[in-house]
Image 1: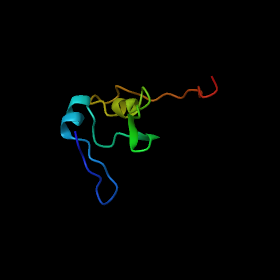
Image 2 (image 1 turned 180 degrees about the vertical axis):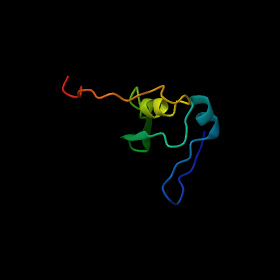
Image 3 (image 1 turned 120 degrees about the vertical axis):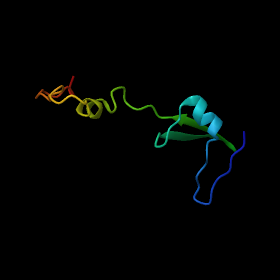
Length: 76
């Protein structure tokens, strides 16, 4: 498949690839230069629970989710 670089330096992924691989607006990618005229595009995976708190807070039943105080687990 071919694509072009826009005047803004953007590269469009063909719709067929986006649909087949579930690529959505706003997803991040890393571009790696492998060699002369050769590049690798890698999708950056979000953290496993990314968006979980927003999802829970948006629960339709009021009082279903109540935030609780807890200690940080950053040092574990």
